[in-house]
Amino acid sequence: MNALFPALRGRADRVALRFGADPTTAETLTYGELDRAAGDLAVRLAGAARVAVWATPTARTAVAVVAALLAGVPVVPLNPRSGERELAHILADSEPALLLAGAGDELPPAVAGLPRLDVPTRVEGFTPVPDGRGPEDPESTALIVYTSGTTGPPKGVLLSRRAVAASLDALAETWSWTADDVLVHGLPLFHVHGLVLGILGPLRRGGEVRHLGAFSAEGVARELGSGGTMLFGVPTMYHRLADALPGDPALAGAMAGARLLVSGSAALPVHDHERIAAATGRTVVERYGMSETLMNTSVRPGGPPRPGTVGTPLPGVEVRLVEEDGSVLGAFDGETVGEVQVRGPNLFSGYLNRPEATAEAFDGGPAGGWFRTGDVAVRESDGTIRLVGRKATDLIKSGGYKIGAGEIENALLDHPGVREAAVTGEPDPDLGERIVAWVVPADPADPPADGELADHVARLLAPHKRPRTVRLLDALPRNDLGKVLKKRLPRG
Image 1 (cartoon, rainbow, N blue to C red):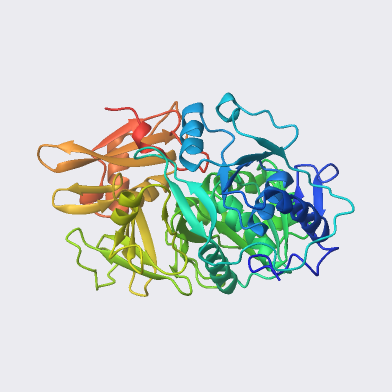
Image 2: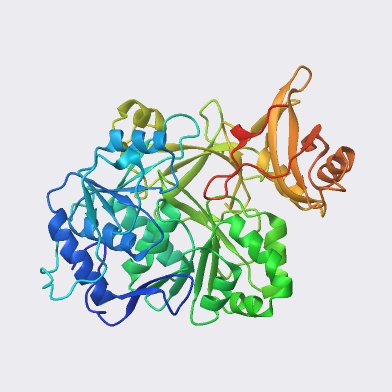
């Protein structure tokens, strides 16, 4: 039995994967078909040092990744929307032996020099090799996922088979995730959320994945309304669902019938939490993870609603908050801000070709040390974590206070005149830093006044957390996961 995919055999007629926006034309693979296609490809990949996968939202990507993992070959997922320079950097850094892609995929010049192998999804007459295919060393690398590169060239995150299995099993325990679950999502497949949680997670359990191809409220209503039990999404998706719910009783009913609604990759605004709960009677569960750690914490399903929090540590994961001087925060007061550090079997093995960056990322060294996430948070009295932003961009020191941008953003989004909001700090001769709010108004012709928003935040939070400057935008710059790219905000 394969250690990562114990359910791959023995469920031959059960649907494993379905990809496509239209059920009548969607590509469907049973576990038996997936086993044959991935097994056939795994034989051809045996011995490769590593392979790249052109990670389109298709069944081919899933087959390619499963095949490489069966063969014990590390996978480098490539974002098809990456620019030429970024692709060239990733390929030069990871040096894959092959590029796995679909027969019809048009590839950019940056990958032209790489040997290409087209991935079949249908294989007839293949005799599966015995169970136990491929190396099963838990410390061997399963995936090399590249960071977004917001602070420099993207780094290759080495994720072991141990880390993947530990994180997926911790989520399964926390979410009661079983082979009976049918997961619906429309996430990209080049990162942890869409690929590891959204594809490998169901396959490890023996359940079914229904990938929408492209996200839509109509697709969510259709798939959740016809047997889907779980929905994974990012805040941008849930915001669109919240907008659609008042006029779409079919969507409201489908979401109300889902066993689990999960949001991740960025904070879900409290206002969207409230709108979804009001329309469906269901709360959205938030979890917290990153490329280097996979999943760290989650809100527990079935518990009281906790908008604005990411829950408590998952089984096997340790989390602590650390002051700037290195001291560990002992008090869980819901106010004191510290950097999140993580330790556990879910952690990555290091950065590819970057021993110095690996060493700097850990307090106490990579072997058993604490990973410095760069995220800042507060901890409630019951141990619940509430993220307030990134240390590099979201920790604002103003008037002697340490303030997290995230809670101010949530307060701004609670104002009916605000559609989107981001908060940054800018140098101020008196305060050290002043709080600046970047706002996309709900009605561009009638935006809320600066003083109105400042008073609104001061009333919800505290006077020292009010924005001193408000700047209006047509839209906030975001990446493929919906995260706001604050470094791309125009300078004042």
